[in-house]
Length: 139
Length: 429
Image (cartoon, rainbow over all chains, first blue to last red; front, side):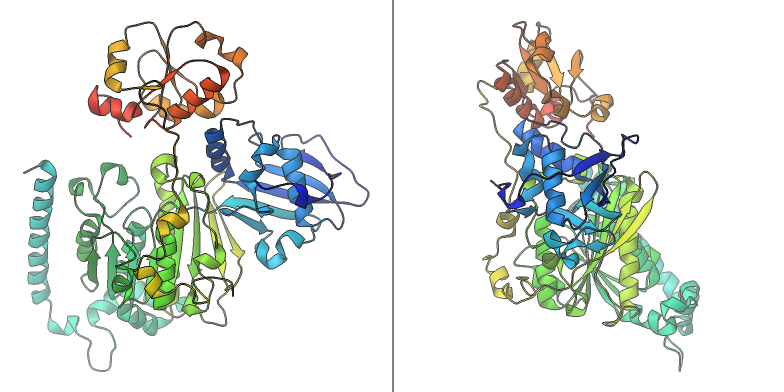
């Protein structure tokens, strides 16, 4: 089972889901990162169905805006997602395997494969758009 | 003879009829139209047929057409991706096309697999595709391989081809095609799709670009892989990806892409909310990639040392004890008039297609979120039965009820089996 220990101390980050438009988090040194979860619903549902513990982990909200401190890296964003958005820590292995994003999930930072951007070490920039999407196999 | 055999025989005869008619028509055409004239690389027939694409500057002119004419393209899978890809490749004048598919045309294919027709249901897909393509463009040579691509035939099938289109539908075949193509030096045009979305890429470009394993060194967990049969697919969504694959192949063959201008990419098509195409810049070839760095050899593949099935894994559904936790459709048929609850755990779209009398629809995702207090109606002591499409999710439901201490059983084989054995008027979809 993957552990959370590699993700350091609990974060001070805050999340604003796109469905709650009235909320606005104003950090003095904060930058805003948007991320989109595409086609992952299926993955989560199937995996969780097998385990019998589906608990609306992303609450069917596909687009989230996260305020992070300047200088935060991708690993800290992942930590924030699994701490703040996955309600049940048992579900972390849906997202994480061996300390990083699990196989079958593509991570794209703006218009680029995250591997070219340094993966977990990538330093988040204001207005970054992160896309998590599943590799498709159907034909 | 069965209806299927008769259909196939009929198609064979129709094809023979068509071939003979074409032959007669061909002989009537003046020899000068079929053969290139002195000083011209193409025949008069070809100039007329391809004129509209020939005059588009990006197509690279006559040389682009000559390249297409001399090209050999292998298309693996004649389904939702393969059909539109084959159609445009053949129409554009690819000289030789190979089609690999051992499956037969099914009625459920027709909404998206546009080369197949209602009267060819039951025919081999590769042969059905051939019938269409031969009447579309007699200049193209079509070779069919009615076999499943496997460790021991991949090299034989790929030899003699320069490009391969991966139009298949499982990770294990995708890894096999990749490894074969890397070892044979074939550039891969890779497409995939599901529901309303699709993905497109060029792999192993001129044996320099990244391959499927560079992108995806580890296969996804098998329970996260959804097929078109289970997840559904919209015809135009998968069709667009197939057409884009044909276009990428044309760009490759006509010489648009070079070592200098080619940059690894992944294009994602989404049809909702608005149709969009986003192209992402992807990683290059990885030194750690087992296919690109020579760790995977032809010998290791042919000997079966590389086991793609084991590499990608298979889904193991928890199988309940058939004696105590499950009942057959026949048994349930007998119990139908007794006092009981029947819970159908399929998604509501599927429940709307068909359902058994007095069944309650609680989709599995919603069911497993419920707490004991929400389920009092199932705790009166009368039997609870679960049903789904094939009898997998219904087992998960029984397991879930067990965790809450509520007894239940599931119906083996689901509505599909009910339709086969009890009531054929219930539609199968």
